[in-house]
Length: 420
Image (cartoon, rainbow, N blue to C red; front, top):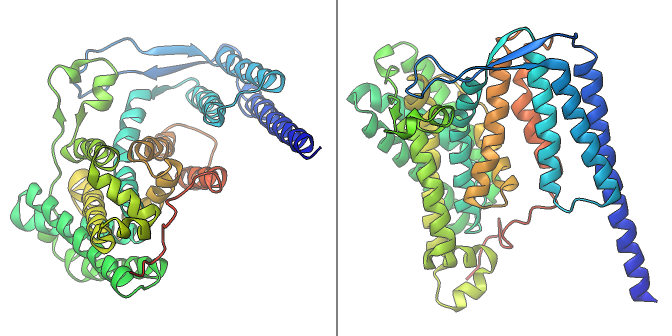
């Protein structure tokens, strides 16, 4: 009877989950109908520009679509999957989320671009670039927390890296030396965090908050006292765009992925490197063991303290690269609090990516897309206040965390000090 009762309970739970997901699909379809279809006129068209002015990619014709028919097709897609979900069920929550996100965003873009030319490639290329600092922050979190140390001071480390990079770049006129300086300051700041939480068992959240407060105050003071009064210290220039031969000529894809700056390419290399390091090497095995069960790892001869020190410092160096992106990789100058919460968004991407470098990078692309979308929509005559558009990346962050926290499983010893 107990087994039968458990089976009935599981059946009820599965039915409730299926019913909830189906109703959400229907609800989103109705929302698209209400917001976009009813606010569009018959005969309206949206033109999506698939080329950029300064690019090596082979030009292709722009894409022009009728607004209302496309919106209705997207509504029908949601209704179809909603009915299928109620009848048979779709086991993959990620697939359902992807369907909902694609249909809603596509309907929104078609509605927003009605009667106008919208640079779709420009938005996608910007999203790919804007995902870079978020991805680097996420990688810092992944490598640190895989070793069992929480580092919420990533935002502060990136601020220090951004300031250091622009000052060194302005003085030396060498962006690569500036990047190395940002990596160094990131590593040193992370080393201070590691020393406090590993050696003295300071609360890891408190230490991370202290780093953020210190970095915000220190960079703001230096900016107002020195950089704002002396442009020679705040004019480093930026890395040039490096097109990849042959690949950069591919239409659409070449513009988005193969015409970027050195730091964007470095971010992709770091994702691949960390994934191989964590899951294909003995070092990665020891790192994951320290983060999951440090006492067992210690019993087998793994130096838990050393592994945590090195991984936290390595994470700080990666965050330093993320900070350098904001100055020598983007605008060539420093402004107060210019990281704008990207370190915290990177932590959300880390959780959404399940503490996996590739997963964290893919999650960062979502946040980068939201950031790029709000920027591009400000140039269109969308009847949405700019303040609400600026909220888009942070709203996406809250939605993701609301849906993921409780499902994502961190390393077992994450955030726990180790006593030998």
